[in-house]
Image (cartoon, rainbow, N blue to C red; front, side, top):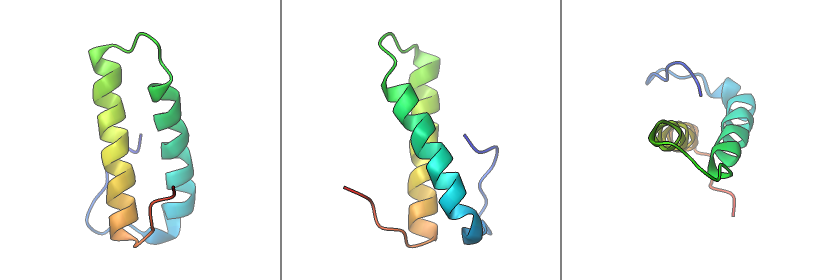
Length: 62
């Protein structure tokens, strides 16, 4: 998870950031016994993914 995303996020970082966030989200989704903290972290990671995609006009991959 990224520490902080601001409205002035630099889209030049989007490729690397999205790659890391997508990997982290996949790991969190794969937890068999996810705690409430794990689910909350997954929610924050997914929100960051959506923010970057929207901010940088990156289409959602199917």
